Length: 250
Image (tube, rainbow, N blue to C red; front, side, top):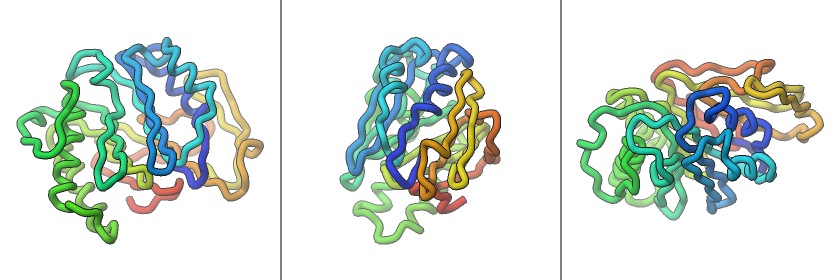
């Protein structure tokens, strides 16, 4: 999620949680990261999200954030364990960067790492470390403008996509980069707000009662989470970047 005001994700997370072992096959752990200014609050659990007491706590506790990344895992590289649970975080330029990946990347571990090392054994975390390595080598200091950084991340995501399936979410707490290889869709909610019903749960909400006219909230998911809203389905190889709920480049 990317939003222009601190917003909770209880509604969307209720649907996502059920996909982790109940309405979907992703039983091998889950995690979520909430940004609060330059800080980042994270929760991880190698248990299925549909059975996780931690997930239940998150779904009931209204944590408000402008940028959130959550991931439910179906293991294909690396055992089911806490250290292999997405999203992964690292520091760059004094900010916490968060990364989640869906897919497989053949040969990614042949790529040499310089500054960052994985804690776990997944191809995803190795790809994240390599990605940040490349950014840090190109920009040892924060770039003065974002144009070059946007171009670099787009190039690096396309490069990683040549190794296999690379659906990616990446954020520094301000921008949210979304790269599609196979399945990714997004939806922006803004005035006039209406009602929405989850695909994965018998649950609806009228956002006109939960928001102000100035709110802008974009939700990104592998597949649409609601049945009665107009989601934009991304195409393979496409990247979309959001800040404050708004699409800034595509």
